[in-house]
Every structure is written in structure tokens, then in C-alpha cells.
Length: 224
Length: 82
Image: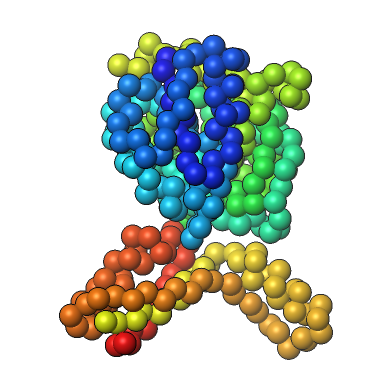
């Protein structure tokens, strides 16, 4: 599989992702400038955490307008796999590729800690190597991770099984404990926790690697 | 030339934890009469438009396309000729 990581000015988890994919998942991986206009060569696009464009205006708002994000919209429609982590999740909601918004944490402070998550849906291309309701552990590091959407959208997310991960002991006030969601079609994932920081035992856990391995598990069905 | 003054605030139904924190800080400073604080953003945008109606249209467009996240924010603005 060809992985591409979009590096925006202000991204700071891009090389962590690169290391996770290249050295731990053992897949081909390329760093892409946010000015790139053609992403056709990639099977999976990763949008990393950080503070793209200084998070000016709103988190992810300026990042969502970068040329590379227009290219992401194009290949997302074709069914390619897109994963946005932390600031990447914020960019995906600002791009309207995922519903809802990430607001300031309920207690307005930056939270950085290991967080338990429940695998709500293990029937996605991102989570098929987990067990349903499995409790997994990944780091979170954000000031604006409080997921919000209106009630109608929330009902849709629930009934379409778009919620992949929920927080145990909700740290930030997210509605229905939402930590990660997919789009309706199931090829785009946005999540606040950092799987790329949980790919080696020495880091504190490997549940993040299991997420990336799930992608390989369904390779033949998903990639046309 | 027109000057748009845009005020963006959280929708009434949305929690504003920053406003809440500022309110608590003010109360700690002994401003006992402070009942509520909302935090928002303010923009001044100079617009080269032929008339007020066009300036109004442009301001609405830039709010909807970039300045405001309509999922959680609302906005209002005033226009003056400069």
C-alpha cells in the first residue's frame, strides 16, 4: 500500500506517522507538501496532528483550504482511504469531509495523557483487527477535542454506526463520548487520539499499530 | 470602499468554556455583578464594492465560506462607507 502524509506548515506529528508506517507497519510512505495538487498515486492519505497554519481563525480552518486538501476531496470521492488524526480530524471537519466540529475542551485546558477508548465498531477498514467493545489505550494531546454536532447528525452517526471509538471517562466533553468517527461511506476516519504514538511497547502500547494493521487486512476489498 | 465590522459568537445552544472561565475569573476579582460572559471574534474587512448591497453580499459570503463555522457559530455585521 502507498501511504502519503500531508505536511502542513505547523504540523508536528507528521514524522511520528512516517516512522509508524515505514518502520512499524513496513509499508511504503511518502511525505507530501500541503501545496501538492495531485494525490492519485496514494492508497491512503494521512493528515497529521499539530497546529496547521498556527490554527489561526479556528483549528484546521486554514489547513482545510490548502491545495492538497482539494486533492484529498477528489480521491476521497473515489473511495481512497483518508485518516485525520487530532489536527487532521479538525481539518477534515472544517473541509466538510466529516460532520461536526471540534470545540475547546469542556475544561479549557490542554490535555496530554494516555486515554482508554472503547472500540464501538470493529467492522470498519480502520478497526477490524480489534474486538468489539475492546478497551484500547492511546495518547491524547489536545486543547480543542470536544466533538460537537447537532442532534440530528448525532442520531445519524449512531444509526449508521459511524462512531468507531468512544472515550472511557470522557476527558473533553465530546457528545456521546465520541473519540473517532467515519464518514457515511466508511473510507474517511477522523480521531483525536494518536495511534502513531502507540506503535511500540517501549512507547507504552501498540494499540495504534493494530489500527494501521487493520488497513492491510482489508486491502484487497477496499483498494480498487 | 466599505468597512465591514463582523462579530462572530458561539450559538446560544453551544457551551462556551472560555467565556465561562473568564466569568469565574472576574467573579474571583470581586466583580460580583458579572452574570455571564461570552467570548467571540471580531473582524474588520475593507471591501472594494460599488454599492452597499454588493458589500453586504460579499460580507455574507466571506462569513459563510471562511470566517464563521456555521455548525457552532453565528455572526452579525455592520457596514460603513470609508
